[in-house]
Each structure stands twice: as C-alpha cells, then as structure tokens.
Length: 377
Image (cartoon, rainbow, N blue to C red):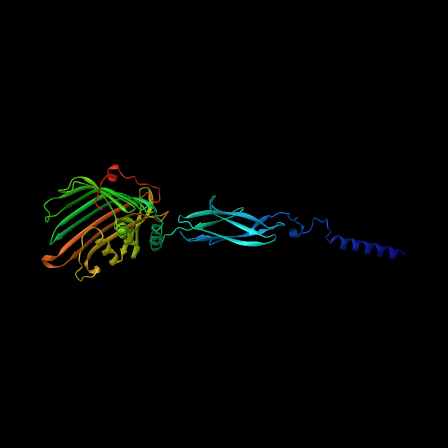
C-alpha cells in the first residue's frame, strides 16, 4: 500500500511537469510573437531589412538604399514612404499593399564631398561614407564630371599673345563675366589692347557684351574711327548654338583639359578661400591646337605641320577644389612656331581663368541703353 501511494505521487508530479510545458491560450511565455501579436483591423505598415550599398563610396558614385515594407494590418491600404539624406527629403514613394503583403523599395543618392551621411526611409535609418579622391587621374575625371553639372558661374580672365617674326602683333585682355547655362544668358566686360606695326593705330578699348537667348548686345568704347555705342542683333536660329559655343567659356576652356594624356600633382593652394589640388596637365595636342585656334588668333594654317611639331613649349596648370572637385583656376602658357626662314612666326600665348560663385543663382539685367540700341541684325 505504501509503495502504491509513492507511485501515485511520482506519476502526479510527472503529469504536472508535462502539462506546465504546454502553451495554453492565455500563456505569455510563448516566443512566437507573430502569432501572439494582435492584428490591426486596418492597414498597418512596418519596415525591415534596410540595406545600403556601398557603405563606402567614391565621390559621385551612386549609393542604393533598399528597405522591405510590409502591411501587417488586417486590410489593404496606401502608405507614403520618404527618403531623406541628413534630414532633407530627396524622394518620396507611395505603396499600396494588401493585408499581409510585402514589397521592396529602392532609393538612390550620390554625394561629391567626402564625409559620412545619414540616410532614412521613414523610421529606418543608416549611414554611408564618401571617401575622398586623392589620385590625380581620378580627381581630374571628377573635375570633368562636375563641370557637366554647372548651371551658373562667374569668372575673371587675363590673356596675352605676342607674335614675332614675319609680322608682329601684341594683344592683351582683362575680362570679368557671368554665365547662366540654364537660361542661356551670358555677360562679359573688360578691356582689350592690341598693337602691331602692320596697323597704324593702337587699339585700347572697353567692351561689354550680353547674350540673352538669341539676342546679342554689345557696347564698344575706344574703337578707332568708331563712336562709343551700343548695338544689338538677333542671331539666326540656325546659328544660335554655334555662336553660343564660341562665346561660352565653359566650353572653350574646360574642353582643353577633358582629353589629357597625363596629369601630375605639383602642390596644393587656396583659390578665393577654397582649398585646391594643383595639377600640371599634359593635354592632347589636337585639343591644344583647337584651343589656340579659338583664342581670336585668326585662321592660322598648319601648312602640313602636325600639331605636335609646332609647339615649342606648353604648360597647362589647373586648381581643383578638394571638397567639390570643381575647377577653380586654370592657366595656360604656350609657345609655338610656324613656317621657316623669313616667313617664320613665333607666338607666345598666356591665359589665366579663375572661376567662382559656381551654381549660385544669378539673373542678368540688360542696361536700358542696350535695350534701346540700334538693331543691326
């Protein structure tokens, strides 16, 4: 009897242990939270699996940010999703999901400046880092890339040219200008000087020039045998692009360094408060000759000579912002000779361009005298 009583106690304890391990409808010990969580009768959205690729990017490289969005509610619904970088909204998307459905969303962004950036998709967040470019070849490729994103800029330029030999000529200019690429507006003003034994008078003039869409307005003062005056002309539709290209400094000067053979780091300097890399550029010789031809030198005929053969010396130096990779300054010093004997000419050309207020909004206003000027179209 005593043994039977002991056996009953052991069996009872065993049953209690077994029963205590089974989940009941009111149990709070279950780890299956998806089953225990009450389902909202309306649509309810959650985000998961935020992914940022790459976490470490080169300047200008695309960074993709993905997230999984799920409707964990009891009915279908719409949901607005905002993508932010450093707290600023860059993009928004609207999703429409049935109850229990999920989808992936992808946003993308890019940054030029080195640093760490915070990205967010509603409540989900993460970071990516832009690593600065330091290899000269990469920096120049970025400079060419950022040039394509320019909308506005201001510039200061000085140029000089001296030709000796079969004929002599000296030219110099000092200009300031503004370019608004989006609005097709351009302004330049400054002094031009020219002297030569082939002309009786020395030119020492002041000019102002505006291009507003398909109209050109020009003032010239100090021109020989010409009164100081404003003139205007409408450019024929078929010539607008060519005229704009001739006058656009972002084309004439920047294209010189787009096709380079070699780039060498020669130091660092500050230009108008901007820390810059300083590079010596070995340009493509055909491109260098095109630049020479575009500097109001007239139609210089190579007479069968290859561009590489006519250059005695050349030096092209650029200053590129360490932060934005924008071109801040550019200088050229070129000496070339053409012909031989008494027909030979030797020319030296120097130029300096400083760029500033890049992508700062600007709007040009025509002087009343320009608007009222004689139309010489």
